[in-house]
Amino acid sequence: FCPENTLESIARAVELGAWMVELDVRQAKDGTLVIFHDEELGRMTGADGTVLASDWKALAKLKVEGWFKIPRLDDVLVQLREKAWINIEIKRADAARVAETLKRHAMTDQVVVSSFDWDVISALEAADPAIARALLTEEKQNPAAALAKHKASGWFPRADLVDAEVVAQVHSAGGYLMTWTVDDPDAMRSLTALGVDGICSNDVETLVKTLA
Image (tube, rainbow, N blue to C red; front, side, top):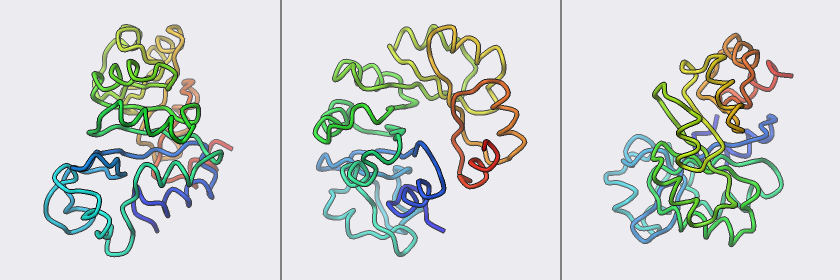
């Protein structure tokens, strides 16, 4: 077992056959981009405070679930170079800083950057239009209009929002659809039958076996 957003869990996912790894990016007080889901540090580290109010020196001393280190985006990019696609979900970070980091590692063509904050995706397009962009959503709405407005090609809805009509709308707009978070094999098969382009799961082993 390896907790979320750690180098160990990412390595294990690739080992199990994941062709894409999803991770969450937040910006620390000093601008460092770190891989961490929550704004609050408590659930994963037991520490008080937030990512945004902490600098990297302090975050580097914390242990996720008592053992694992919090990685930086730089660390993950080095780890995954030419090994797997990366879905970088921006939780709270400057889009231009994310773009600069990807360019510095020469990995703009190995990632898709997604966010629930669609203004961030628009800002990323302004920073570097070559980086693939996707819109995360928990609401049923017109994907074609949203993709056009924010100049994105990926539509990433919650699994219960996916049906044949939505898949068709995304594909007709020239986009691709990846859904989340699906751990049940029957649901994986149903979504695949609808024509989704990707499924995000906590259970990589089951997903790979089910779709083999």
